[in-house]
Image (tube, rainbow, N blue to C red):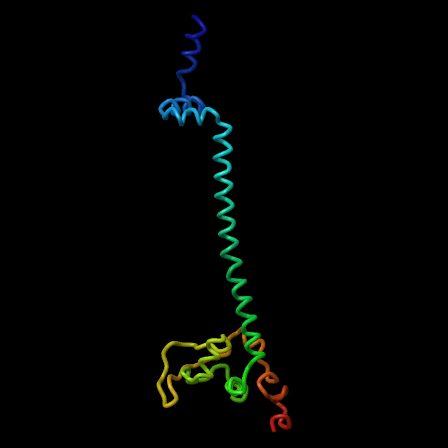
Length: 169
């Protein structure tokens, strides 16, 4: 028995991956076969594409996590700036929360002062439907959580200690 016959007998089992890939490559167009033969270029190209794809996925993940935090920080700065620049009418509206010792108050959201405070992010409406009155649409509003940290009695023209009867007079 010759060496070719022995090799043929041995090769009758399942094909290895490299043999399967060589058989597959035979059916590819010439241009593709030349490209695959120089597999180092092929490997670098595929590796670069996978690395680029992984980088885009990481970038998207970070972008979706960082962008809201940056926007929230900018919104908080705007609220702090707005609280520092309150006019007397806006201070009077905010004083009502302290004087009535309430978390939520029904206010006319069409009023220019209340609408301005809502637009600045200092007040928030708690629902979309309300009642109409002589002063306009009445909706329950609350101090926004971001603004509640910065709206202090001293900033809206109230004494620091509201519990002290001497300070209230």
